[in-house]
Length: 416
Image (cartoon, rainbow, N blue to C red; front, side, top):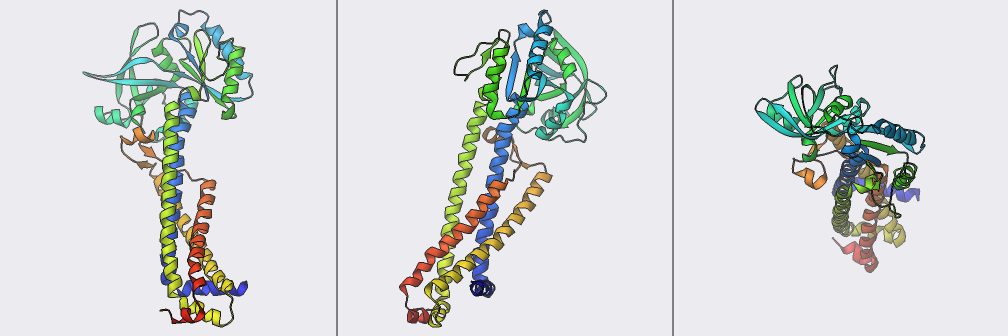
């Protein structure tokens, strides 16, 4: 076996033209396959994980306006009851309050822009920064509690920059209009048309705009997202809510609702499915094309080396041993150029992530859920690509070697 491996290594160097052709094909396949897989995972994370972690939570408690109103004197008691229930459940890893004032307008002299205000706690800022890719420095609301984050879409449209002042008008729970001076303390690069008009501000400040003693929503993160529906049912039961027996819909709690992420990310899940199967189809098509290409090159390689095969057979080598030499060559080439492909992928993904993702244009957000895509490398995808890069050149070589079965030693020695 050692002799066969040495012969295979020598042949790889000696037949450099054939080696390079096969190697380039394998390298390109590895690079494109892993990029397809990693981009697919990146899109998946942005479509689904972002929605779950930042927009809906694994579970969400949603208060109606009447319950949120200051006129509801039982609001504080209700909040204490809910918090106590959440604190005592070990399956809950964390929860965050959110405020979503309705019908909000950014007011700049004679110009106005409809906006979506999202009030959040400062502990959520790192996650916000990761999601929206802030364009400037440290993520903080600043000393002023009236600091706000706006998108670069709004900033560019109204020539706003960090430190500029602006006003916000908002429709509160009880119908009053609030007008306050705010300072732009951060600008983020929006990742989709959905969050282009989002304006993030500190929770307590947005609570004043909302004119409420309760949050709009409570987003709940759980230890195991697979248990979200089970946990929803348990919390709903403790809070005397009404849920359907199949546990597949929002639970009505009289003044507030409890839902799981599955009740809200239907479109995200649909886009995720299209993305997953679409990318998989591209990968399968690429593998098939690569297989045909390497098969053709191997047939030509074996034909060009027919005299070499005939000489080995005439020296007493069995046909099986001759075939093994070609197969070992295939394995060596696959291994060398697989790791070459991996190195190229690491360089490409590092450059992409250093640049904060691939910008596909604003319209891409409707197809991918985001206009900025970051590849996510996975050990599983690397292993799967390794298996593909090793198996299909080996299979192409094995099929191509069948041509030797039909040739005698004399015929092989005569071939050019």
